[in-house]
Length: 218
Image 1 (tube, rainbow, N blue to C red):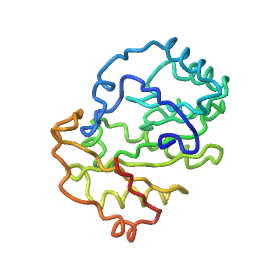
Image 2 (cartoon, rainbow, N blue to C red):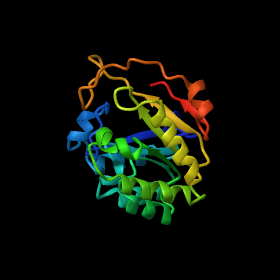
Image 3 (cartoon, rainbow, N blue to C red):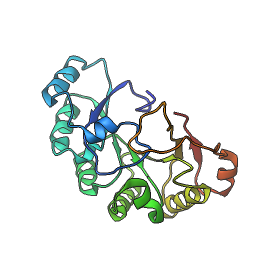
Image 4 (cartoon, one colour):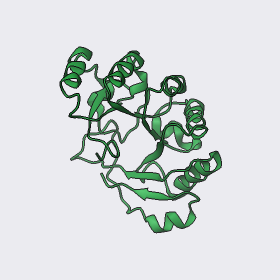
């Protein structure tokens, strides 16, 4: 239920990603090609109809998978609620899912403010992310949350406030979740980042933020 608020759910990890975030703790998924077939996943879900209430589509980056729409439509028809974890680089896919009523909850990763986006994600596609954020803020049918994985080697408190202010300007109405990254020798990650060196002060950040913040411990 931590992964899909209010529902007992399973997670489907989809291989490949269109970002290269150094703190990513799923390098084998980002760089891999997957180990379980679509048919096997569908068979698993079919056996659990009535037992599980939701399916979380994560990765990697779920919207990068060409089969996502068809898979989601099939699983949704079986009565499962769908949560999508996404980095927002495929606004066309998100818009299609919303338009067909194929998603019930979206978690959008706001990776970094525009001036740090390339350094954090390894991609120049901030405008595509921005389109997805505007799309989600403009609709009321599907609840969504914005969240940021934070590491003091990549961002500082001013960057977090920049993101919070941008969310407020666009009309975001939910809580903004901050997730401290875990890096170092004991946690394999996509990049070679050092361990976090600071404790993030929620009270100090909240005093400067125009939206409500929460820190989620990993």
